[in-house]
Image (tube, rainbow, N blue to C red; front, side, top):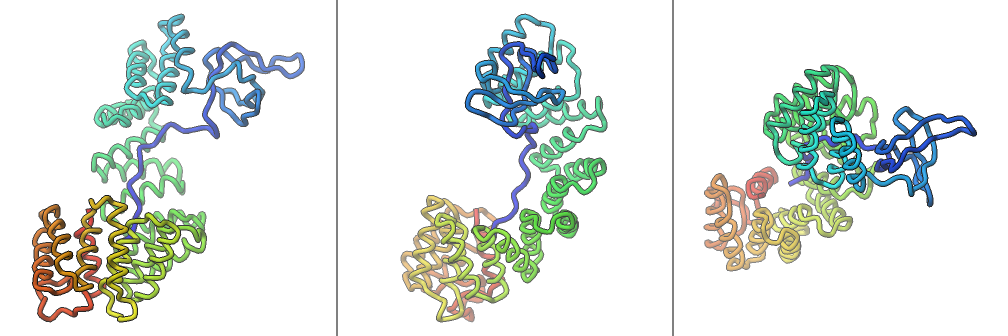
Amino acid sequence: MIAGVTLPALTTLAAPPQEPVVARVEMKLTDGEKVTDVIEKGDLLTVIEEREDDYVILTHDGSRGAVDKVNAVRLAESTDIYSDLIERNPDEGRFLTLRASAWWALGKSEKAVEDFDQAIKLGYEEPHAYSSRGLFHASIGNFDNAIADYNKALELDPESIAPLINRAAVYMAQGEVEKAIGDYTAALKQKPGNASLLRQRAIALKADGKLDRAIEDFNAILKGNENDIDAISGRGYIYFQQGNHKAAVKDFSQVIELNPESAVAFNNRGYNQFQLGNAADALADYDKAIELAPQYGLALQNRAWLLATAKEDLLRDPAKAIESAKAACEVSDYSNLGDLSALAAAFAADGKFEEAIGWQEKVVENAPESYQEFAKKILQRYQDKKPFTANPDDADVASENGPKQDDVATAKAKSAS
């Protein structure tokens, strides 16, 4: 199998170049004797550069200056500052939202939600308050509350893009793919050609089975940047899904040219080479992937399948297949059905049917219902002292050299957890 693109994570609060710092005291930025800006206690300061004794910062209005480290703390260390400001200004919701950001930096999303709840009760009705609270709700799995907050943020500011993007991510987490596509499309109307939005919509389209449209989005990204590795890799994976293995090989080859250290690209190109019948090239790619990432379980499993089932006598090597499958199993702690299936097939290819039966029994024991019938037929084949075939119903006529190339993909896809 090949490694694909995963679904997008929930969008986080936009991060500055470095973690922001918080002013501990009031400070004045000066140019000679002229005061250019006043920094209040609790102000968030964007760090441009950290030096030994100070931070070079930008204030909210874009002023640049240097702040001694003794007068500023990192966001995650600022809760006491905001608690003091809240105590002195109990009706000021803004300080609650700032403390919520500090809780967020500490990974305490529930406390962040509590502060936003209180801020909104005090009348702090800014769109970003609902958008940020929605983000915190989403981070702890309160998806319905998150959607409600994003809806409110958009009601208050229909032109805002952040709530659309974050709501789309929640829809994806809920399996509401069509709604996610709609949100990404709406965001793209405001930011036409934005590569990040196109990429996220392409992932959503892929999840919805709209593969041609997903390719169109990846192509749009590549028109703006022909060397966008993520777009090339994402398109290559879709070509694989469509059975267009030549195009997939071309895309993963381009990824390798741009990043020769990409073990995933070598594994993926190898798998598509295998589907084209280029077993020697596939084996070379698997070997390279494993050289780059020795604990790469999927490449180890793929190599085991190839060595166990290759038609070519020069490539088939059951002993090495066993070794590779065992390595894959060790990576997954013997919990991945694809790895266990490959190990059983490798033992069968080596004529060690008792071992093959033992491992295939574990596959049958843990396989999902949709794979049970196939797994049991393979088990019966090993009990009959015959090696693996992807077509167990044709066992009497199956080649002992293994299944057809296309069927190997089917067998492994079914057995993967």
